Length: 112
Figure (cartoon, rainbow, N blue to C red):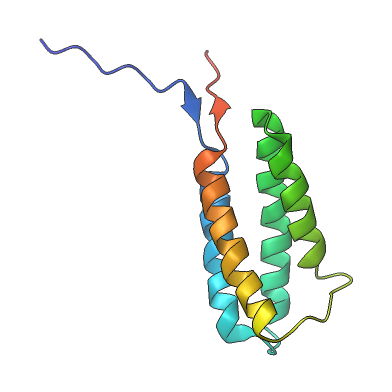
């Protein structure tokens, strides 16, 4: 009888929020200047705070600083009026940043 593979010792809780935020940032390129862009700001800011929280739980505090800055820049309450090619490049760059963080942030699995 083959032995069971060992359960992973860590989990990636930030992976799904990071992928959703990446998709929202890339789809936002088509929504720049529309009413729907406010919704994207809410999604990105909230998910940046969630990913930052998971980074704190993982003991990787430097990611929390990065995602706090993302939450500030994309905040919907006091929006920064940014536009142009640099703003579009920021969307792509931060989408990649979310994807990398989602893959690298690992939290030890709780044992029951």
